[in-house]
Image 1 (cartoon, rainbow, N blue to C red):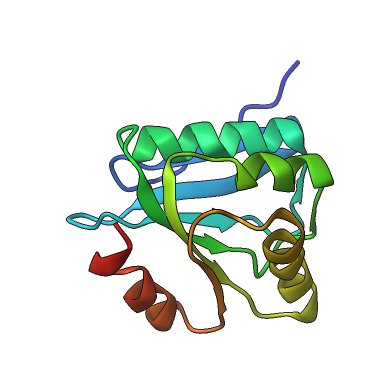
Image 2: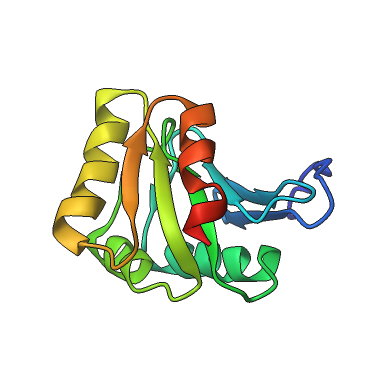
Length: 140
């Protein structure tokens, strides 16, 4: 018998991406904000299928319009090469701010930036407020 997952109390318009092992990330957009936030769950490993689910979630939350994205990778464990390539080719993103903390999260974000060379402005931040300010009105 399959175990029921508890209901998650989410803000309106939010999406939770999960696979057979559990919750991968939450994708949300604040009221009145054009910035979409992707917050990865602790210890998440992202492969191509998970990357596809996340980009679909971003498109859904953004109403299928291009938006700036804050990606919190502070708790993430790894991303595959295929996932990074997929994220690098996402047409619904206008700018990416990676929120990093640990040395591992810096490596994950730096790999994406250096190996995939995103076509949109991309930066690393340790402070969420600075990341949001950078993604603000000029990044639409």
